[in-house]
Length: 298
Image 1 (spheres, rainbow, N blue to C red):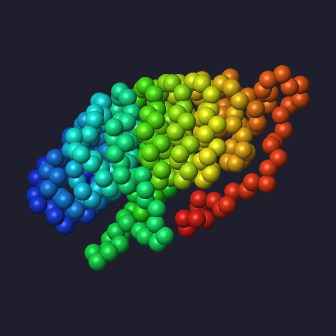
Image 2: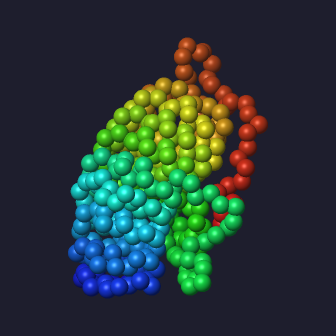
Image 3: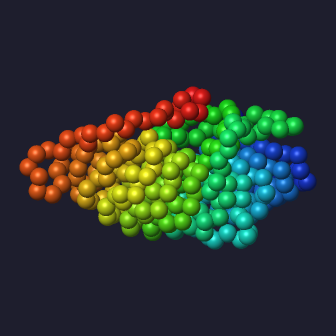
């Protein structure tokens, strides 16, 4: 958050004690220095909101302790190819590639290998940076549609934000393996095809934004299995058919579905089938069990 310009030095050497590098909010250009591979203890890399002009830094996938990768709002471009390492980004919990110029299909091979996003459950309240050499981690993330500055990051917070790029093709079914995900945003791309039913496996997901794409088909009934979901945005697609009802889907408003002219059912005024009476809110004793803010200390 200064006025630094020029390029990031390419001369990182044996930085075995460097745990976080945060250069966000400057005017830095050029490419990411590959000498960062010498920083084997790096846990947080945040170069968001700069002018970096580079392709996807797949070589970072071999860093064994990298947990937070934020490249948002730069000039990254091109395809994201298959991983080169056997266990790519094995400890990555937060990936924000939003507002760049990435193109091609979504990186399904990565989704199938993000181990830390598959099972990050713990009975203990832990924060990143804790340990013998304590340090405070502070990052800015878009969560449930709001930009939030997190000065402490719980280790159970796992998010992927690929919004505002040029991704195309279908949403990979493999995303359903990331069962610890709290947030998924792939809005404002050029995605086609239908919403995969495997998203229903994401029972810990609290916000899902697939808006402003070209998705077609019906909304899978399996999405009602996302019992933690409190924010849903499927607007501005080409979806049709009845909106699922039950559980969390009884709590969403019209704005979650706006711009999909073929959808019908609650909460929309458009009826499904040949019914002559407008659909009413489904009767349910279901209540949200605490908001995300309450459960996470906000």
